[in-house]
Amino acid sequence: MAAYRYLQWPHVWGNETVASKILHFFNISLFIIWDIDMQIAYRKSSGPQGYLVFLIEMQYHIEEVISDFKQLSFPDGVAEFLSQQLGYREVRPLTKFIDDYNWITITKKWPKHPPNWILNLYGSD
Image 1 (tube, rainbow, N blue to C red):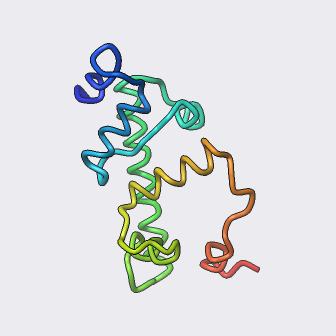
Image 2: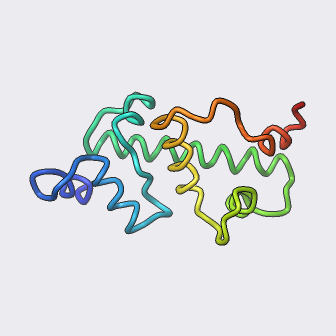
């Protein structure tokens, strides 16, 4: 977490969000962006240690998603399926989907209802 610590003021312009974005840019499959709203929502402290705890929790959520997806017996992997459903030309890593989910649901506080294709995965009416 030395890199995270170094990327914060006074070494570099920015704050914790900027530090997480830079790390995410350098390794999208490992680092997930966070902001103050996410820190509050996940009840994480600020700083490098809080960010590390956040990343560990996000890893747990990714493992949980993979497990749930396997139970549904889809032929493709989770990232492939989500990329296809969301219309991406290339497969995006699960860390990016977690990042997008956090930003949409926590920072932007939308949507009010999940897309129908998500509900259809579980046979909901």
